[in-house]
Length: 256
Image (tube, rainbow, N blue to C red; front, top):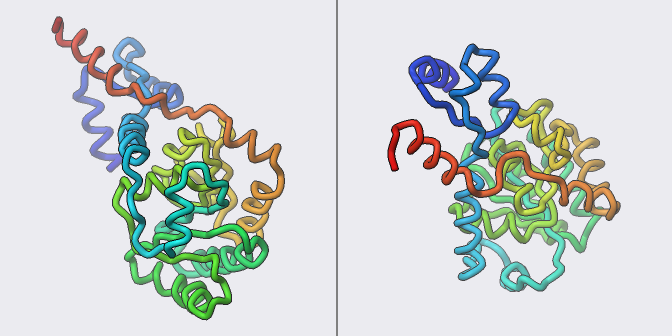
């Protein structure tokens, strides 16, 4: 992926950078400043389009209990929900064991909070999730943990929009969630989205049980911290990246 980007960069006459940090990196590679346009990320444009559809017609989330589904569909509900995603290869094995134990501990510590986890199809992800969380939730030991199948984009956007916070190792979620005012706890040791960390919308805690529990617990019990993270500026765009790209292309190609 990076090789293709570098090759394409050498041939391109116009470069669209999602952030100022991306622009600086291109300049370090020898790209002239005049050939770079900072646009924001088009994924935020797509997110807002999807959000409008979700608000107009809330999708039904397969696998959720009827009562919870009703709460999610009711935009006035003050339900607390932690949305979870996980799939990174670096977390396979011990990492996912730690993640699952952290979720179980948090579910016991916050019984009124729902933990919704669309489980990735990778067998090496599903095995520890089903072994540690699936058995417990099926015995009603953890009735507030909801393991469901992977979702289509509109359904996932609906859950992001209703979530209190998001626990993830995904890169894309780190860009999307802040536009919805959702704090993100990242279960990795590093992230390719340093802008989000600097902006305060994302906190990196690693795949460590103690740190995951601490990070989520602080957001659920400290309103001031939650407000700070949820109100922070999203560095990845305002939903108008496409317009900037079209405008720049027209100027570049001398089109009216």
